[in-house]
Length: 219
Image 1 (cartoon, helix red, strand yellow):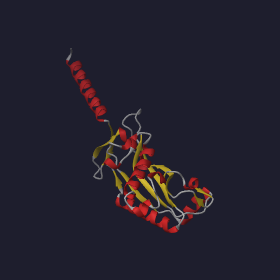
Image 2 (spheres, rainbow, N blue to C red):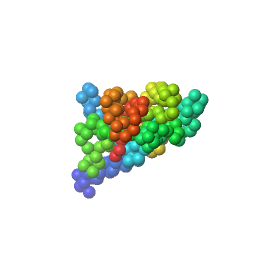
Image 3 (cartoon, rainbow, N blue to C red):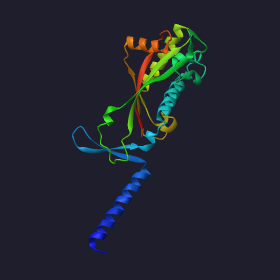
Image 4 (cartoon, rainbow, N blue to C red):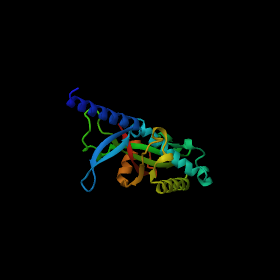
């Protein structure tokens, strides 16, 4: 073969090997820039960006809460099982003003996309960048007494304060085994916004707090 054909063949072989290695490693490569302005490569595992990721975040949060609550008898006198930590909206759990059972509602009421990923050009036209999510949860203790509401909310606040980053074995569902790091932070929501939210629920206002979870992706 002419030398130029041999060289082209070798280049195709090397590129094919590199592509195979990327596929085996389960990673997609995203080029960005560091604070110093130098080019860098970020790796995001494909297993992080499954479309079931929102449900997996739900499972992760609920598992964290119950794992920290189940050994606390003060809390288990209010919530008897993990099933009482629910992702159902609070208006489904309160009929008029009466409660059938105590519960801790962790309701996903808002989803935004993370703007920082939108400006990153795709490496290939057929492979768009992962969609980074901001998930907003409304956490509401639902019991038949203010004391129990305050106790339950205080415990949940303590848990999220002590575990602001969730990774490794803390991750559940399709997030298990990934390098994902979820960040859980409280969000300041004005009293007016909360009142408007509960007005939309068509239920009397209940003590609530909002949390934002970042670090989740959908491909």
